[in-house]
Length: 527
Image (cartoon, rainbow, N blue to C red; front, side, top):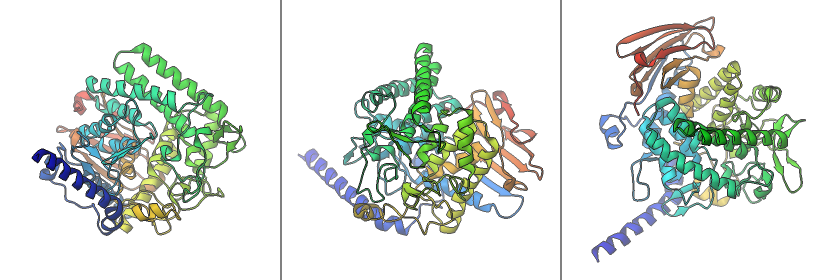
């Protein structure tokens, strides 16, 4: 009898908390507090089983870039605060994108794991595995909360993120095998349930895409929704290429060459279909194709750029897309990569109708590196980091999305006209949202400073734009027992040294040059 009463009481408390989270926490308390500057110490880290101190950054050399140092620190404060310990619902540590989103979200978790990668890889793996553990059959769910089991999925990026962890940190093969089994089954589920007759992929509902009020298929307030089941989607299809590549790499690491070849061949097949069916020659972009009417949805959104991250376009088409990415009137805005091109008629500063989202920007930047556009990458990645850190300095918050034109959020709105969203989540971008906005830290570490860890050791390959000349950086990475110092010289060369286990290894590099540090010097990565 006591056990039954305890269960009823627990369910009652969970119900009250769920309603409070939905109707009160997201509207009142979050608006009046911040998770930043929580003074993470050894005791707090021990409570969440985080093994290492967080990475730290110091910036010097001249004034004007100290907001990088401050913002870098706050990202990790909020990341730590949003890490959740195992609960009745999730038996692993898991990550909230932000306090108002009390659940395990699929693609948010993929990006959050990449932010944790440079701090504590075991936490990163838990964040990914929590999504897999909550799957329904073979389907990875959009979100799992106390009283929510979504019928939808979300962009399939868990395999992509898992291989990024494994390739840099050499995790256990037993864990990789668990990931592969579940993610291969999920891939087959997507083929059965989200694949069109033409071989490309569709979103069951705008909410699956993660970009729900995009002009591709929704009105601003979501009162009108297109039938997305008739749209061959360039972003979904590109994500499937990334998933195939990741599954191929997993199969290779696990000693399954035949499976690896099948996944690799499937990636090529999907790439060829995107290239053949979704490219609009006049506009120089990839669009949704309505398979019923044969017409393109000519909405110039961030989804049109995602195929770049999957290596879809040939060199000539990639060059045309690069021009749009660098065009200040299109996607090369002050904070780059608006979710709708600035000069598109549907552009407005409401969620996925114009504001900058760091997760999709991160993917597009990945695409630039994939095609060797290092100079453009350096310029745009720097501006993205600079913009987020400047807003953080001015408004003392890390947000869900950003204004592409200004270093403030005053003009941004959330689904204006949607009374339910206004009631539950407010009318502005959510605060303390590190779910993917925290990707600016790995962009700085791995993209601009150019530190990357592999099984063979580590590599330093700095990529800095002209704006960084005269600056110096000191980066501490406790997980790797590594200290990195570098200065960007007036001529663009980078001089510095990397310290590990009492050894200092100096280097001086031109733009794009790499300095390897072998494993015996760098030390074995911990898994």
